[in-house]
Length: 256
Length: 268
Image (cartoon, rainbow over all chains, first blue to last red; front, side, top):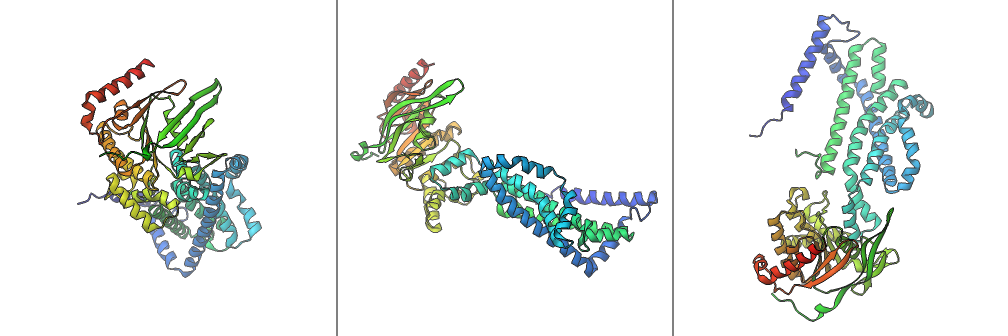
């Protein structure tokens, strides 16, 4: 018989302990339900939320903004990262600007994006893309530049052309780093979409959370946060699945 | 098994005044003094010497991986370099095995072996058929579908030899290919290499710092010495083939080993 992974026992135990502590704290200190509702109240609100067709619409919008933003970030991040990784002089020339744009607190730019792109999903897609872009870009550059020198020699000896080198060596060699960047990026793109929704417009789960807070429905707000957490978890797992498909050979991918 | 004579004596690789020097802050460093060398078709040539003697530099120059700072290299009737471009026809004569197998971890063993054929534009069915044939030749049949990391060092090096042979090169260049293996695996691989060489009738240039490995494998051993890197002496090894591990116990074999060791130690 195969041994059960330890996380199958520890994860539920820690989760139950956390919920009990939460419930105990709220009961013992008589915390107002407008500050922190008990776990059961959040669960009830969550069941209500996922049965509400309007909430479904909001959830789809957030998911849509996240995925489109993430896709844009991936295409541009991997494309530009590849070019910069292969063109050291260009990377050196652009590096100060890349660092500058990376350290700008991008969330502070959200009002600007809303000004430029309006209150619709476009502004949120841009925020999601901008946040996810940098980890994907920097990891792609790292991956392309870290190609093993000995592997390069192998391609030279086989008289491979530039394109063949890219397809057969540089890209597959950089994939683990690119996927690591995408893992970070997908979570950031959810944050981007939700922050965009907090600050402008009347759709999406971010808006729903703010609306619930304004109505003093703190339980409903927690339910929205729970739904966002689940969405993030699913997307993170999907990128993990992508790793199993695209880099099954890599040490970081455990056998299922 | 005897090898046919005749065309065998024709020069296949011709080095004319090939040397390598680097500019360093302390003045020029001579990695290899200008060297003339002719390698016969079908010859098993071993470059032997301590580290820093230029043996790997010499091999990398013949492989087209480093460009000599002086002299010319001709493979068959093709110059290796045409201006600053490598000559594709000269390169197509070469297969290279590196110190670490340098298999691509994202390709299965058969995909690794078939890679040179893929780059040459051969269709999938033919190249995988060829890869299976080569797996049989180097003794790793049954491991076609596994990842390189699932194989031992010796098995990976067998796969690397198969990959080097995939495009049917007439010359096999080997840079300390068994240096990282344990002594028993190394003996085994030397026997296997002799068998493969006798089967494929190719020219081999083999770099090592093991005297007994050199004498066991070689038709001719070139002893190189460092500072500056140069060819010190050439010794022919006229032992009948195929050689067995027991050949190493014979007086003639030990005489050659002693001679080489004496020359190596006199340089210290």
